[in-house]
Length: 504
Image 1 (cartoon, helix red, strand yellow):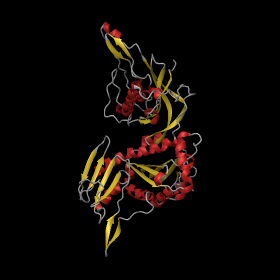
Image 2 (spheres, rainbow, N blue to C red):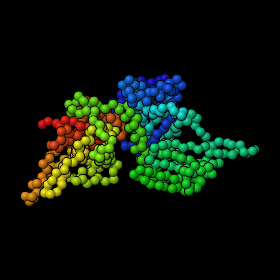
Image 3 (cartoon, helix red, strand yellow):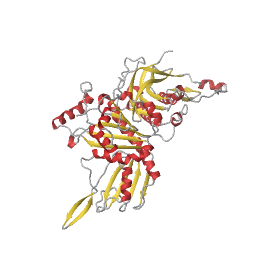
Image 4 (tube, one colour):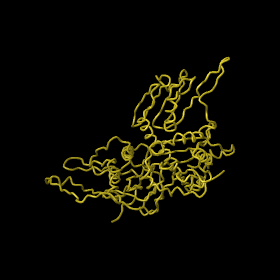
């Protein structure tokens, strides 16, 4: 098995530079089964089971893929020198193109910065582990993000990489004998899963895809879920489609349904929209691949902030915990740009995330699914004022507000600043004194003493700051670690935990 030589480690990825300069316009994903020796399959089953149960003993266990065939396909199609690609230091054999590989120990997962003239691409190669039940085998996943300048090259690149999905490139159809006559029958060729957009082609079983639909298929394959249904052999996907018609459906928040008659190709604007949506899908695959490799979070037990992941458990039927979990999920949706609008809250209106950041922040699993003990006591406290029940600040909302304030705390070098700071004071009758906040809040941003790495928009990023919020009545503060790039206002929030209230 051939491994890469002299590669840069994943932590050397210039993530902030890429976030600033790279504007992906299309995402593509390719998956192919890996062959393992039969004697290794029982070990793989035990490895995937015990990796969670006994992570220290199985820490070094991994499926190592030989990526030479993938590199070979690219070299063959682009006319590159394969030996130069395997060096991974930027050389391709063509002076106008570059190929730089970032991979720990030269093994997957890896990220490749690839330029073709002025075109920029990012390609990741990762292993998708599968317990080999019912014939399942580990999968090699290749993801490609490309900018608009790369569009002329994508059809050829996709055709080359699609060869890993099948051992033999299938023909347009199969000749089937019917008496003394050969009848052409279309091969059903579905591809893609978990994309936002699904495309259903309804084709003549004897003729295959028409020229128009072949061109559409080339633009949509590996960026959408593709289903080709033969006329006369309905599998329930095509619905009321006629022969050579195409249906394009998007689910989730950006829902739409397009229908194209047999002689009508998919317009360029629709392709641009579908390709734009594929970027998020492919980035999610890249996030998962790198997150599994970087899944060890920093140990906060001995950190200066005093945090710990070892939180006490709570009973299964806990109404406070259920409400806190719901509140956290709503806040997480708002941070990640999954909520349609910012919600008003009892004590204040949280600034909209869209106003604070250029792109929606990303959230680590240790934020969304923090230990139960982290959420205990974060809810607003009740008190009587003037015969009314008033609530104090909600710690989860205070954390959301603190995250929205990060761009102000860490401005870009060239950020515009207001020349005059505007202030105001409140005039109110004496009765208002009893409504003054007697439970003030605090907030602090700090550098963490032991930075770690996480994944944001398909890139490995260095999490090196923390923000903590608290009320004067709290025994512990609520804290979150984050990565922030001031120049592009990209934010990744890694986790959520409790710490000692900072002094001073």
